[in-house]
Length: 249
Image (tube, rainbow, N blue to C red; front, side, top):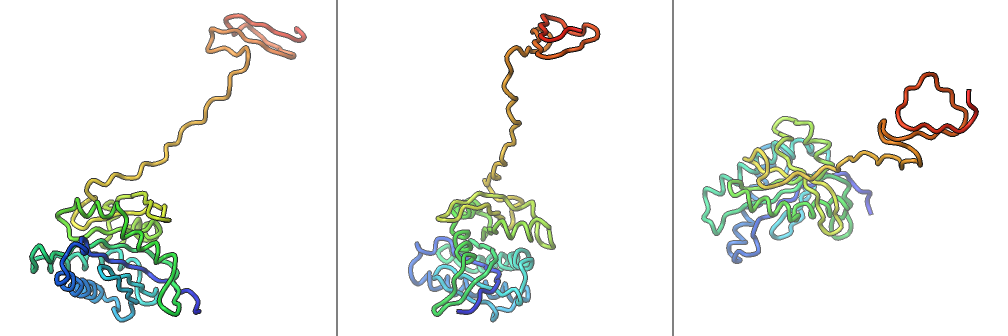
């Protein structure tokens, strides 16, 4: 078996595919491939270099690092894909309307006798199936797609605000999808911030509790003081009772 190879991974999934009739599904699949291929060509990424894993209503695409970069995929490619979806949306009726959930991740992928395997592929499919992404696209009625990236992509690409990428438009979400328990980030083209997505709450840093009070310690100036051992006090600066044990000087 060959060694794993680092890939950028894009997954597109058509919203509501399963509820369509078979002729409509066939038409949607054709348009799905047309839109995605055109988006790759628009940003000058080599479509023939992409490993395409067909899943019926979705495509898992593996792009070798030698054939592209994650900055182009996170920015210009998403814009081109959104433009293509909007163009097709003006041409078709509601029965053939196509909106997409899109995920971007990266990592090592390995080819075996029958296909491709890798934790990064599994993570990518979990991202695109996340309930949070589905809910966001459902609420974003003015958009044709909702886009999710792994925290790894966010930290290495999104947060740096490269050209055509606005990190302020990405909302953090905490995912719990099967074995995936990680932070991810959602973006909706055309929205300054994903609708109705609440940012993941930050962990509240609470001060450490004060040490337990020792026997005889007072509060402020009203209580007494108890000292054990030699004590030398010049001038009476204390109010209240004072009890001193030890040698008096």
